[in-house]
View 1 (cartoon, rainbow, N blue to C red):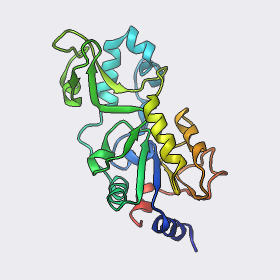
View 2: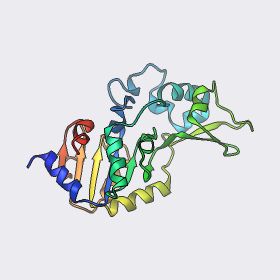
View 3: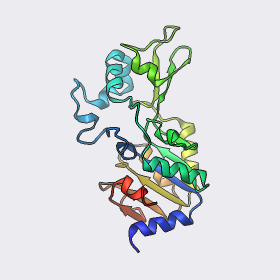
View 4: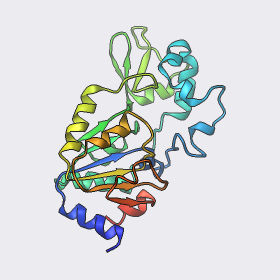
Length: 237
């Protein structure tokens, strides 16, 4: 039996699937990957992206941060792809327990998924740092300079910057879902960003599937590895 057939059989036999996804899930919707050749890291700014989207840079140089953020990190107007849609369908069928994602674009919810744990936050949520009033991503996109609330406070995206900790509640819920999963599919991630990548270690089962175009540090641990495009795999599931 080939790898795809094995995966199809495992999916058919599972009722508590957890999907753990990275940037590769969204690139097929046209959203550029941070680390790909044409991704953020090769763009022309005065500082490397890791520096610009760090907490200390945001504090010191918010105007520059927001210029970069608007131009490179606000993926609006993109649509879910086949992977997002299949996962939403599995959840409706009662097969999928949760999606754990490193992405900040909200496309899983746009496809219809309800149980989504966003490790790195979401560009769709923005709050005044002073009064906590909510603002949309469109508001940030259309603002100039440093986006300000009616109260005068800075409006900060609910996105985890470098040097900031992950939300502990999101981590705990992700760990609980992963621990009780009967099939874990890890896809579209290089598994090099911690602490997110370390969550895989909580999986207790014997059906760990890795789908990624390139090799990852976890290939040796997985029970099934497919070095293929996500869309090619999910369109057949």
